Length: 259
Image 1: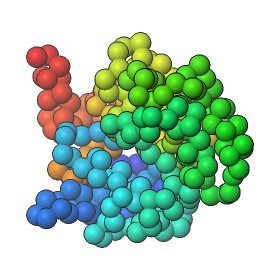
Image 2 (image 1 turned 180 degrees about the vertical axis):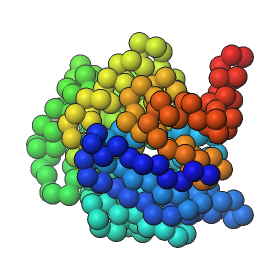
Image 3 (image 1 turned 90 degrees about the vertical axis):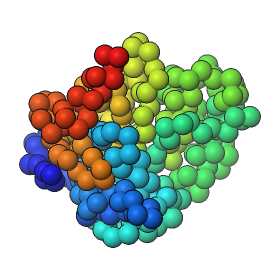
């Protein structure tokens, strides 16, 4: 297992998030086994691996859903591992979910207002939360859906709303869980462009994705997990040529797509 690769520091800023030897077990299952991860300022870091590799577990550990059995997470050199999810969110780390989870009987605007009102560190009024939510919906190109119930939105609109809700908490780090999966080619290209626009606003991004063309096309670096361990990491060109990755993941996916 190759657990460390040199990073191109000329292309990234300072480290914003560090996970040291993160380990998490569920019964006899080792979901994460001493995983190290570093995320840089304004970086897009891709996270790939077969189903069951530990990707979502890593997200849940970073977001505070699970406390690691051992290891430590530092956000801007302050320990956050062990904090509640709401406190981690207010520190500046927001996430989306693979299966979108909006409040279905609330409008798009109301959904975003919830995050804008409750998810930020400083106290806001409902009026200021509404203004902030309107701006975010405009950025996500959902302004014409602001009064539409979440239950009436299409898949791609729900995915954009999921991102809008996360952005409403004013994060420094955004954890994206398969926001491209299920989209058609045109929607995929638009989502890739959106993710780059989010990064251009100074937000660091850690994203899980199975759509290889997308994650290889926008990531600065890619981490590959396999059976709860870091198989390797590097830039996309290095990853696609790595024999271990091809055998463990990319080759299997290519075979699946061929079928």
